[in-house]
Length: 222
Image: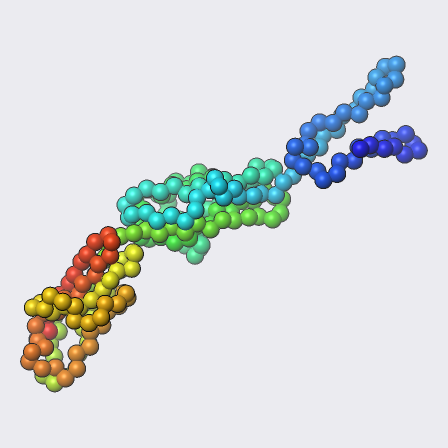
């Protein structure tokens, strides 16, 4: 609506301004020779991330490619920046292109949460957290593959695994096909043998398996 004061100055009041209200406005006096004056309304809109057009949490196989998208709206057009949630650096061979980040031949080192941050100078700055999980078959390493212990002593055999999803880990004896103990999900496996007897000597196998594969390693106790 508009109104004027006693000095014949006219005002245009716009309530609940929306982005579509931006543009050029004209004031015209219909005298014999019409007089006009123009004004331009700039409308600023804080950034907003459109979840429907942005990536959600993803699970990918190691070695594949993945593109994370982050669509932000606002006026002026927001700038989108990417960072790792743990503040670790994004590898230089990753392609950053404003609204998206492309990760080629993804590795387990790329696993974690990524933040896309949208800002345009109009507060507040907004962000979206996208969790990237990388599936890979189990890897296994054994610190000591040959362990010598006298009779009647105690010993602990160790085996480390790394896998995603978490692997199912267990121990077996070379001549015993069934697991020696209850299966557990963990990354540092310890097998405690107390008061060693002659029958305890031999080869022990550490096994790790998940939906992506299976691996094993051996420890010889003598």
